[in-house]
Amino acid sequence: MKLLLALLAVTAVSFADGFYIFKAGDDPIDLLKQLIDGFNSQITKQQFSQIQLPKFSFDYSYLRFGGEGGSIGNFNTLALKGDKQKFEKTETDEFVKFDFDIGVGLKEIKVEYNSYVSIFYLISHSVDVSLSVGEDSIRLAGSITVNKDKTCTAVLSNAGFEDLTDIKLRVAPSGMINSFLQLVASNFVSLFLPKVTSEINYFLSNAYSSPSFQKQFSDFVCIPFTPK
Image (cartoon, rainbow, N blue to C red; front, side, top):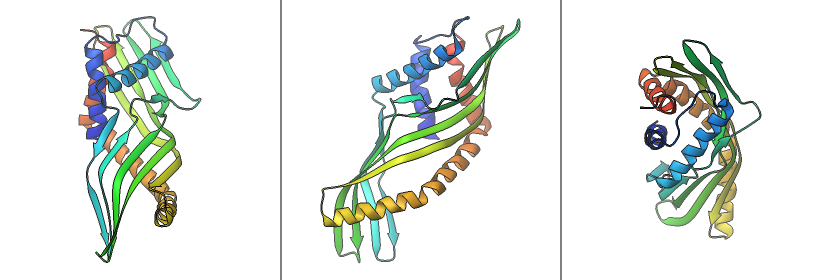
């Protein structure tokens, strides 16, 4: 959740500086694309496209596995995903309302770690592990209402991963032991990915339903619609 809010905050800075302000008559889909382009531009500008990950360790019986120097990246490659994109505008004398149901995702998610495996606390083996996700999409649904008095309210009513596939895992340097580790790790990822996706969606459902997140989401999303 902190990561998501940090990404939103970076983009909000660009909008607050006048990067893009919604104007009456703008095409809704063009507006959506400009918001995404603005996000990618600011993530790159603020050098926020890659984030460092913390150390971790996992112990099971006589086996220890851990990693350090990790990173997750390519946050500056956000794009619309899929053919079902809804960003419709309803305009009255009192307000303008946008109803959205869109699929977005990164062109590629990449995770890297300097990892180690220790057996019986005697045999230790270090490897560089990289994992890339080629197909990812998250569904976002909700509404944005801009009133005649320029007040704005945005609501996120649904969020969840639809696709998390085309996963490639690489272990370096090459060699017999690393090839075996890559095979084991790849099978592990394939086996537990559905459960991980389910857990992420459960986390998202709890996160976006909280009043604090809804307020922060509304404050962020409304920036382009409420020029100061």
